[in-house]
Image 1 (cartoon, rainbow, N blue to C red):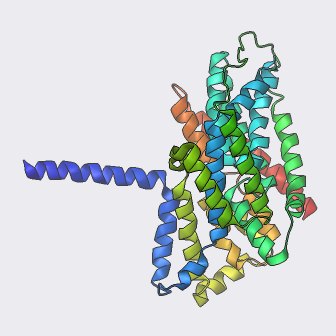
Image 2 (spheres, helix red, strand yellow):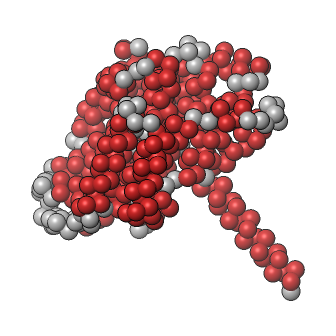
Image 3 (cartoon, rainbow, N blue to C red):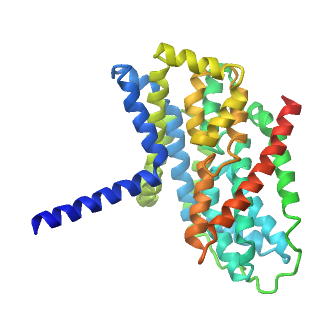
Length: 388
């Protein structure tokens, strides 16, 4: 009997392990790569120098503050307020898409999708427009990925690259945004054109007025101030470690439970790739190979690599071996289009759709997602070839 129970427990553990690996495959890969690389470069205190703590502190701070703002219902309140002002179906879908586009510039693409995709699914179901859910969610995903590329805090790879570019060339926030501005502008125009197939019919049963309230205006005000401090830290006006301490203190006072909502596995993923990248930079034959394939080909190498391992790991892997960071920046951001794993945010949307919609049509989602992504990718590639 004990043997049967032991076997049953073992099966449960193995099942849970497989489930974790499937859910956090990028984290697992980063840890495995770090471990494998440690066989070639003996572990030492030098490993600590591999890790960019400035980026980790900033990521932690942004995630905590965004969790606080979300907990105060600020994002839902803004979404409902804007949606309540429109009467046509096309205009409503436009609001839902551009909420992701503009909010992702400041609260990251992940948070924008986690906030507005479930809201969109519920809203479209409520007004009996369920047939539009897949198309709108796909456009929201593209909007979040492309809107987020405009600012340093829009996504993790931008935060990392902006920090690196500040250290190497003293780039300013506006210099950074200027690089991405043409691509962000074209993306916005493409999103507007993508709304044209949606019929501009009048919505008769949209009732949203003041259903969602900001839960605590004092708390919301404090988290807004903390967000401004995050922005000032990105500009290097405030040290990141001081920002982290300030945010920890206020979060513990206001709502300590928010700390549970921080994606610590993402921070651990960064650590894994930092160690891996640092180690392979000290392995001569691998360093030479990566330098050879990456140097002067940063854009296309990073774009292709993003399709396979997603753009955040691609950034951390290729950065030590690139000679043109601007091309890497463009490659990993435009490379967020394409396959569903090119950006981890796309996987978030897919999970939200498949779990949030009754009788979800995952195959149709993949078809529409792939078609739309390839169309956007083709246009932005053409813009890149023109601008260089």
